[in-house]
Length: 176
Ligand SMILES: [Zn+2]
Image 1 (cartoon, rainbow, N blue to C red):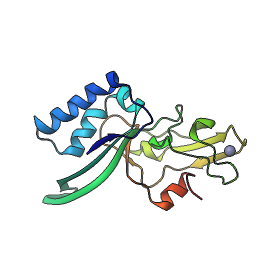
Image 2: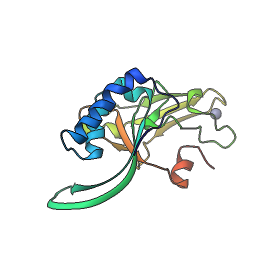
Image 3: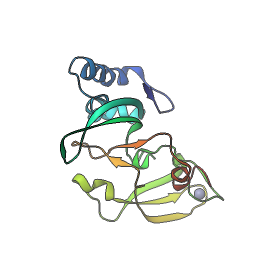
C-alpha cells in the first residue's frame, strides 16, 4: 500500500517517480521497499513536495548474514531532510519541544550546528534551532535514533517507521 504523507501533491512532479516505482516492482521484480527508495531517492523534485509512505510485506536479505532471509511487514515513510525548508530529518511535523510554545516547523529556523558530516555519517550532523514564536534557541540537537539514513548517494534521504510511538512524538514536540 502506497500513499503520500505530505499535505499536498503536485501530480506532474510526482508521476515520473511513481511510474519508476511501479516499473521497478513489476518489470524488474525488485523488493517493494528497495524499489521505492530507488525510484524516489534521486528524485529531489518528487520527495521535496511530499514524503511518501509504504506498507509492505516481503522477504529481505539479512545484513551480514548470507543466505538468510527474513519476512518483514513494515510501514515506513521515505522523506528528504531539509533544514532550510523546515523539514529537519525529514520531519515536517516537527513542533517546538517546549510545552509553553509548541509552534510548528514553519515557525522555526533550522541550521546545522557545528561540523557538517558527509557520507555514511551525514545523519550525525547536529542541528540548532531558533523559534520565531517564543525566541527560544537550542543547540546540539541530534537526529532521533529512529530516523535512518537511506543507502545511496543522496545524503538527505531518510526513512522512519510509521506511525510514531508516543515517546517518538514527544521527542519531536508533537505530544507532551
Ligand atoms: Zn517557541
